[in-house]
Image (cartoon, rainbow, N blue to C red; front, side, top):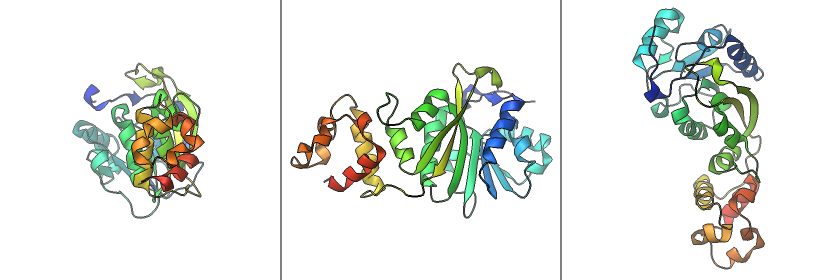
Length: 250
């Protein structure tokens, strides 16, 4: 068999019903190219391999798991990318879908990778720690609305699909999990540049308890800061408002 490595944040799915539910949710939006991130023991992989007419690849860092997967599913030969997901290039040419029970210790970095690949990611369906999943899907006014909420929602619509209990994993994590779906927005909010949006959002939430005027004062001229919008705190601004503000930055 194989061993579980805490250093890699490994909590493997064992609940067949949840695996089938993920695959059913995945199939709600058609795709021809599919990348699985972190197959682990292959609980989800075995169902993904059954999908017909799909160019399938899976990326796994742990050499022991790679050997196990190839021995268990010989049809995976040539389909496994044995590398750290965060360091790989786009695995396909053109549009592709991403799915996975993502390692919780790099889940935020995985989302930033999705942002890097946003021109080609047609859908992402992933398992995250519930708290992180809720944060990604949060709307303005929520206590958990923050940097990752705004940056992801500037380019993707986010749907919280369903909860997953700790008992569905081996070993059971100490937290609940949640599956979310990202779909590209038909129309991205107009912004000065992505770089400016990232800087503004990160600066605003870095001091989220302060008014926007005090949190981002170094990014705007004094005359601009007189606008009533700056009386608000970062968590009160919509994604669209953040995007519009970038045009007024220094």
